[in-house]
Image (cartoon, rainbow, N blue to C red; front, top):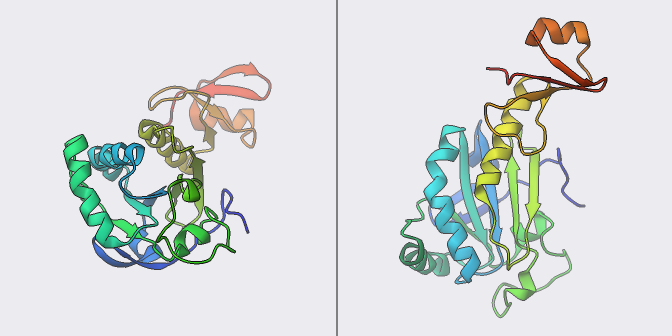
Length: 218
């Protein structure tokens, strides 16, 4: 069954470069960003893993852990980390999941269930769909998923922006408009009456009967 927004993120136990983890326990009471890769030693993914290493503190400020996954085994990940440091100047000090039996990739609907065998002998093109970013909440539900083609490097500033929105809108009955950034005006959701909006948010702007804007709640 396909994973959708608000689906429970599949739990799993797996080896990582930081040792064995049980995924839901590892997430704990915060958020997690799981981002996947079709193969080790691939050029675009090398830049992505280094970029995420540089952003680890930004995610930590938002009570979010980051974890990568590639279908290759842990021994390959460890060697790849040296290349990532050489290429990007960033040391990967967050866990990378080994998935040589393709179990996690299948559980997260990134590869078909009926694929047999292991990662051995599979090319990046065989695993092209293992290119999804998942944001998972403290309730272990999927809050966001974005899948990119192999030739398009991911914009992790956008993942941070989306995480800011997800966390803000989980606390207040607001939504964020297109291209919203931290500190900008937000949208009051239709579930909030005009009277309630005035009491909750103070002044607001009615752009359309169904589109009301107000300052971002603190």
